[in-house]
Image (cartoon, rainbow, N blue to C red; front, top):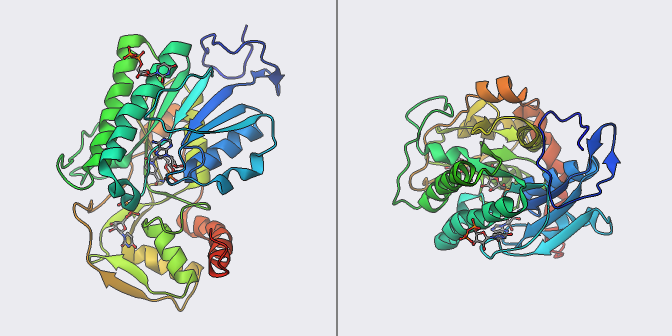
Length: 343
Ligand code: NAD
Ligand code: UDP
Ligand code: UDP
């Protein structure tokens, strides 16, 4: 029944009578949880563009209707206000499970809710996948490596995570979500995929997000000093959002479960990042030091050999090319904010 250029044989699902789109590719019905958020909305754009039917599930905790509004009126797009902590009945072929706040400021805001989202939310989406025979992709995180003692981090590294710290609701929540994913695979035969995402940036990040790239870019635009936490010598590796979205789709369509690191291996200290923002946005930008937060990982850099080999994927956009791509979006939203229209 399935004459596709995609090599993976999809299980027959509840969705029948699909119209073929493109050459040799059937149209999928896809759920994106957290699809009104930063990464989710870019993923939705890509799926809609290739002709899929997309259902977004979002409770708008950190997501915004503005991120997906351009699809309103498209009969292939559906937006459901729903909290993944509650069960839901749907019939789809694929589930991209992104629902979860990603910025430390947001996930620490209500840590118990973060755990419920990661554990009960993931359980519900896996229960759904099991019932309808859908393929399930979990967006896990590089935070599962904690404050890593191995550098760069390979997928085989088990991590160094504080189980009782202020970041644990997220780190341990995602680790449990990975465990649940593998247990539904082993126990119930659910087709699963696991991505471990490293720091990602781009248009549509929340302005008040607290993450370092959104902070520095917004501060530079507002002519405020960029706030460097601690001594600024800690490192992160920054990936542009289109690279991530390409990786997520390659993973979903591919043969391998993972986990796969999806990140850009270009590693920067926070001081170096501030320098790049200065070069790219405003040569007169200044920095200001602030106390760092608890349990901040000292360094982070993905080893992406596995994704290169098995998904034929690697990031294409270096930081210096990616940062300018988010500036217009940030400028416009900051301008609107200043004019009292909100963002
Ligand atoms: P985001 O905060 O912009 O998006 C998360 C979305 O999930 C939002 O739209 C939010 O409203 C929604 N959401 C949160 N809790 C929910 C719930 N209980 N029910 C329904 N919807 C809910 O974050 P993002 O950067 O787009 O991250 C998306 C996913 O990728 C997250 O799972 C995150 O952990 C993962 N990730 C992101 C990064 C990154 O750097 N952006 C890094 C590692 C992992
Ligand atoms: N679930 C859901 N939608 C479905 C199927 C299941 O939300 O279509 C939820 C269900 O309510 C349960 C969870 O997923 O809380 C796990 O479901 P599963 O069938 O694996 O476990 P059980 O219901 O037997 O505990
Ligand atoms: N950071 C910073 N200034 C800021 C926000 C964050 O120096 O305004 C630092 C933070 O201490 C951490 C790094 O930037 O070392 C990345 O933080 P972010 O919250 O973006 O993501 P994380 O990788 O910690 O989840």
